[in-house]
Length: 388
Image (cartoon, rainbow, N blue to C red; front, side, top):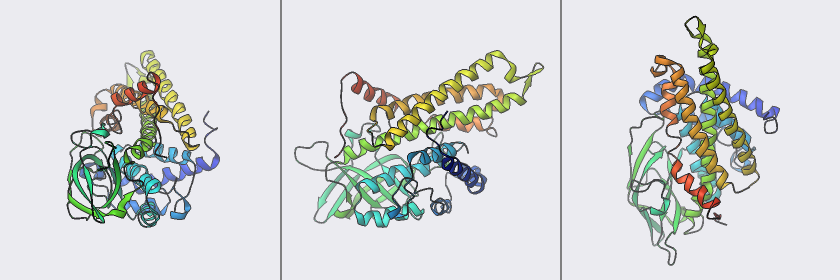
């Protein structure tokens, strides 16, 4: 059905990446889940294979491929059942690195984007704050120009790769007359004096390092402001579309894997003389779940195709994340139920999957925030402008 989006080259890429993950990542996942630390050696391996350069220009070491290679990359990482590992990879690749590409100067791209594509440097994006997660406009972190430097003070929280990354993309308020929403996008090296991070203990996504970061009179060169002064809010808003679509794709892939595993389990598990997949009540619920996931997947592919054509898919990306994460949560909840007591055991994949999936309706804009954005566009006829 999806041959309109995937060619034979795409399919070969999927096979190769799946083999790579099984060889280089899966053997270490249990340790990384327990320690909350992903070995840094895996990043250069991703870089060597070009997996961080899928959507980036060849000039900086990328492959400049279409968006469905990214879709495959995301889908396959959900199949190894570590939401934290997947999050660390895509937060580096499509949160931090997107800002480097879109707003960074040529000097920044040559140094940081190239190293990020190679896996030599790890990045994180710092937006959310302790007093305002989804409310970007309520941001308190501030950057003040002092001669040829900016001085940053404030704090960020829930930052994926926030502890072990090599550089931080920081969104901060700026003092610009007649622009109360003026913000900037700043590049901060991890070893800059005044930067400190505390690791957070999470319900799920346990392999990834999630941090609360403090900035205490952090001084950076004025040249580390990326893009135009004051337009940071618009840069963030326009890149949110990709982040939310990514989370929608993650959700449909996660749910699809849960269903595949559960169906296999049901075919092998017997109760009262027959396998679980022969009971009508369970068969019909599985049919409903597969339908719901397939609808999400088909919609997400359509949104991805439009985004690849530079269509500004704000509403559709919000819908993707809103519905796909909701469906994934319910599907995984029901799949765990189908496993009975074994579903509650850590040695079976559904327990971790349930924890990891719960972040879907929260991160990258809560479902409640997304509903309001969609309502504003549908009911109030609001349009969201780009930074251009």
